[in-house]
Length: 461
Ligand code: ATP
Ligand code: MG
View (cartoon, rainbow, N blue to C red):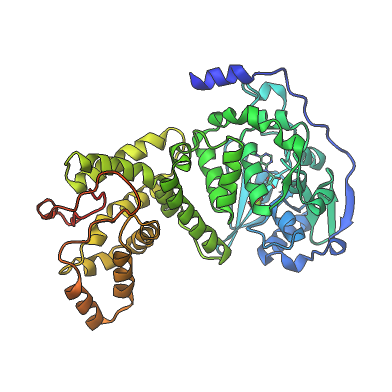
């Protein structure tokens, strides 16, 4: 219903397709400072194999863009005139994926090279009532492929073997001026695919580029179209945004553009609440730091941090009514997950990580007997512990608890035994400093039994 209304609000006449440019400016890669040796050997080999078989093979998108900027590309995408089936035949370890538009994943060890066939421009009959492209599975020429891409800086083609860069839309000029510019008419391009508005926020933050005014202007009005994005795509794009290494800035961009409404309940509610924001900010800052160091970030952990306030608020409310801490936490988790499921389809495997990270929180407060040893063996212990450290950082639980576990992890057998002996008999209830609201100490009786026990907990109740 809401989607229909939004659709009507934003319905427009048929969008003008962007003009295909037949002419590309041609550069030598070396003249712009890039060399084939900067590509992964997997990317080089894929290009070679395709070209030897008589097909085009150009590195496109982030791979070229980041190399030209002196950044380390996340991965390499290749555009070709070979059909997915032709590509598939050339590489033993490859598979055709995708329904809407087939692409081929070529595998080299753990590296995956994504090979896509040039796409044709979409036609009007392929869009829904507000201009969103539904089917665009026709193959086209390189010129058409270029004009379909989102930003000028993402539409550069690099042939590492011929040392050539083709630039149809003045991407090199925009790279040099550090400008993010949409190809074609920005408003039509957002209607075609509202995900592009989120991409503006991501690239502006990741690259520190200025968004060209015409590219930025329509977003304020068209922001509600993000509700039309199918939830699985929204999830993928949010994940890219959160893992781009500049998540704090990117969320700031989203908020400035009014794009955060409805993406995650947390972004709606929490970003406006200073306490919640501190937790989210601490989580994102630690994620950004991990990305900068090249350490892996687990999406389950990330979403557990982002949705934590939803869980915590409910948990506290139930505990304030006198409900037992553990079932109250479980119910709070179910409710929080239900709440966001419609909008953002978090994949099941990540949801189960989130549940575990959350439900281990009270267990971290049990430090007597065998409990801490057992917890240490838990497959999700490390994530739960990292999560608790964030809670310590914002004052949601006592720093002492975090310090105790850090010491316990590092200690040898004797040291551990001493720490267990010296630990408070019941967990030091979660301590929420500087925040109002009900706060009761854990009731010993309530924690009895239940492996997940230790009531003290947080929600502190
Ligand atoms: P990253 O380094 O984050 O992967 P990227 O530019 O490679 O950045 P991808 O999402 O991997 O981003 O997309 C690869 C390329 O496909 C883009 O550079 C762009 O040319 C094109 N593209 C991706 N999504 C869209 C879209 N929604 N509309 C138009 N073109 C797109
Ligand atoms: Mg990419």
